[in-house]
Length: 160
Image (tube, rainbow, N blue to C red; front, side, top):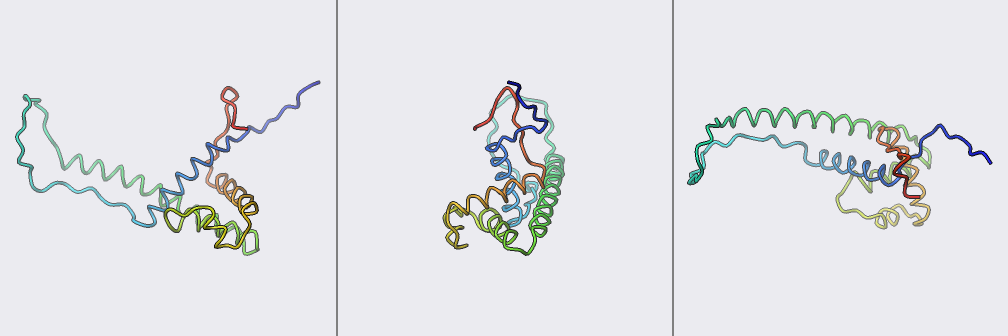
């Protein structure tokens, strides 16, 4: 028998879920706290230095400026991803399916820390099995919308 060719690569579900959960956690923390800028030390530390001369010149102001520039790039990225997530959630529609998926993503990943699945499906008033189906559907739609899906390599295989 001949094997049917598939031109669509398989998605590594576990890696995609892990990557998307990491991004959602970063966005939740960013929305909650924002970014905290690094500041330069004003007072020197009066500690005995017991090492030989290194002939290195310390430039604390430059180090802080470089760290803040790198941090602002990350802040811009988080702001863009947060905006894209909001766009995705708004485009889900006002029907029952869109409302359920929006509630699951918001309540489980974006509102509070340490929220478990059972808390969310009890709050929504849904059976666990139905919740898991809706959650996986919303999750992979969001992964594709944000282009965060991870594809399997032929060598590594998947977790099927």
